Length: 345
Image 1 (cartoon, helix red, strand yellow):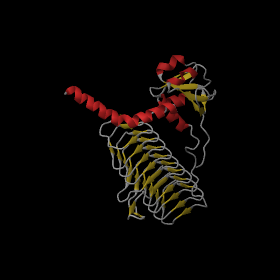
Image 2 (cartoon, one colour):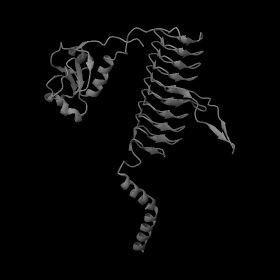
Image 3 (cartoon, helix red, strand yellow):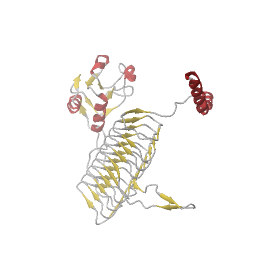
Image 4 (cartoon, helix red, strand yellow):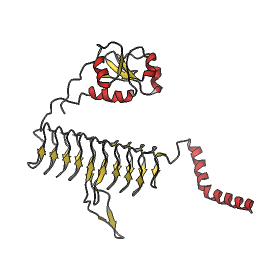
């Protein structure tokens, strides 16, 4: 993608675009974004976590994005917002050098099948491959070395970073971001065993990604065995996540790194799965479920809320003692039951 010059903005420009209340020099110009501790006089910092309040009085930033309740502690100019982290997200996009710029068109080394349909302002990078029957919407960017398989559709404004693989028959919505190394539409893990060896089951379904989805690097979303694997709108998937065949994930859910979801499980809307969470197959998680990191879910969850499993780290000696006691729990429970029955008698 063509880089652009990072824009220089006045604090008045930023306040207007973010809907913030500015206290300070409206004509002060800035061209960068940094942490409170590292920001210089031409950069904006932000305070979204109270743990960094200690850095606020010493910051050299030209201005600070913060909640109004912290305004009196700020010696620099300030941009007051009820949600400063959301303001930081919006400002980061304004200052991103990879957003905008003139599209570079189709690189001479790219291979684009004659039957493919390319929209306006499409960019196809070096050594990328666009196979037969593909449709690329307006403003799509296909990074160097990426492959879009036969009859796939990439919606307008979507971006494939370098070395992304979109397999055949995949539908990608609008404004989707696919990071390097991810594979969308690879075969699901389907095999039949005859008692001696495995026999592959052809995976005949596809994958459908909704609008505004983001998939992190080296994540895999498998195609369905028969029907499609479906990822809803505005779903955010971190790096090294495995989503098996025929999984369905509802709108606005988020999956942190190393989550693994087994086949045919359904995750509702507005769910959040922490890092390393595992979901067994053929389960249902209702809307609004949060599962904390490294938890294993083996049963469906039908009520929204926060769920956890496993134990936190401790010194090995204490863990070994607890592990022994864990194996004794069944015997202890039986003895306790006998004692209680004796009292009742």
